[in-house]
Image (cartoon, rainbow, N blue to C red):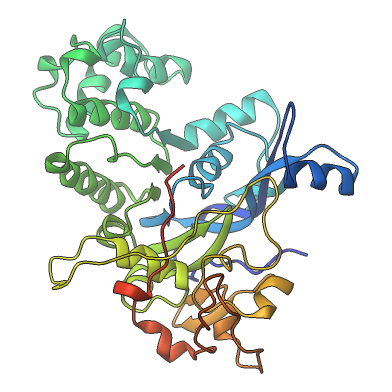
Length: 383
């Protein structure tokens, strides 16, 4: 059964919608431990649960941020939305219609939904100059009639990303540009076909801190001036609050919380979101944050039953291991997949591996305080 979507409702027109997207990658070769037991029990080979039953809607003139640590399935989700990989289950709807499989319709889909990758140096061919990179989308989609028309459109798209004068960049190669300039060229290449949806997969993580703000402001300007629906993928929840209208938090391939960006960051309802916020830099924080306790993301081959965050959660209860939490309301357009928000009776909290009793279940009004200091579990190693 498909779990309820965690995307916050909005009246803006929906351009691209994902319903129950799931992607499992088969594991080839020997698999030790739990993964092998899963294969024997289910009678098939083990798979990596990269994305499990994710639903979201990208709307015109809105930025939706997907936040989570490495391995949470963010980039896989972006590639599913871009049509670069085929989902194991679920469907994609563009303007309310299912994504077509014919070559021509897929080309139309690629023209409407463009993607900006994380590393601009890797996404640009080092043996070709800027003019070549920007000419390709115009030629592939038949958007330029002549050489002069092509040159004019390339110059115009460079100006849209603040690379001016255009003549100073047309014949430069990627290694002759700064990181921020390369990323602006990559964004210009995506904008060349006049898309309506832009998927930005961690577009500033490879850039110097001093120039990240410029790229984020460029995305905000494109949202406002061209009514783009933008998906912004990041592990930095602080930048998500700065840029996004809506935030979706993912953990171990699943959505755990979503809602208006201000609500999610000011009143986080899920313990994992609170953990992310406690690890984010805060100039107003007086004391240093000490993340304690053992914990790491679960195996993607053999994920735990119930809530996948329960092995690291300071409020874990027996029901967390028994059932997957549905999306509970946590405010105006704000929902969270956590049993702590269930108004019904719950079992007492479990005991940690260290033998210290965890606090009992708390109400949603008590969850608005982000986990800080010694309350926070360990983030685990980034994978």
